[in-house]
Length: 438
Image (tube, rainbow, N blue to C red; front, side):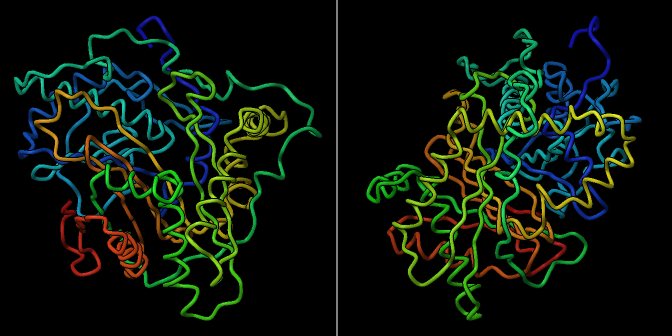
């Protein structure tokens, strides 16, 4: 948005939900962490951030409360780089982030970027971080090149970068033709355990050679997403359900689907839907049966016509006249009471497979690796992500409980397959004063 454009911006269709659901304990956050090969120059990173944010108008905003909806207003201040907080993905507020909907911090050689999901999703955030790294390395005097993989500061801003792609791809339908029932989900197994105090979260990262993992997947005739999802389901069953001799339980994974390629979108705002992948856990589960189930679910849920129907259904709720004219406080009450879309019993965990992050080759000498994390909460105490940068895959587990049995069983599956693993942790379950060491 240039100076000639509006000073405010509607939240995209997906983003409207996140402020509605936030409370004192929970907020839909995710983060990106980048490990460099040398300690971060905090002052220089701050200068790079001031420069970079001007290139991303949809992120250079603050969240405001309107009469009917929350909305974004252009931010007139400068973002600041903070010292990393011991609490992973600590809630973002107007007071602790200067009014921005993201927070950049650092500790030793690690850059952390926390985002409130209302402002963007993982794809948009990754583009922002790539641009920030490019600017930072340039200020350091390093010979980097964007290689057409980075939205550099000097590149023009395409208005399609900040469009609401849900509205762009919305097709008006009669209410009887909406696929409301497909969004409801069903009751599923909930992971439980002793929670950390003070909103603490435990983080375990598993780093593995990407080529080794891909070779394992090819050997079993599946994709990386299918393999990780299946091993996670097996790990939950082996460590939680089976030892407790529970009756048949449905394990439900919530898997985000990036809609950009399917609908030719360039937006840097939210543009994803979810696939619900469910299986009834039992001793009869095998790796092969689980990867096949995940494959079938994703094949079903990534068909363009299915996604188009879901887009129309979710946007309809926003356009529905009674919902439009309700004041904001009543909308918030409805969203909090409703169990239709985000019922606490409707998923076991969220698993986001980011895939390969396309970094320029010129960044290689300066970056060790990179990973993503999704905040966990009391309703969904364990989340998992997977992302590959250059030759390294990072599988991230974030949790609100002290128990690490799921992660241990998952790692054991991989090592039994001969996969090399390097495991790091913030050791929150041991020392709640420890900084996140990745």
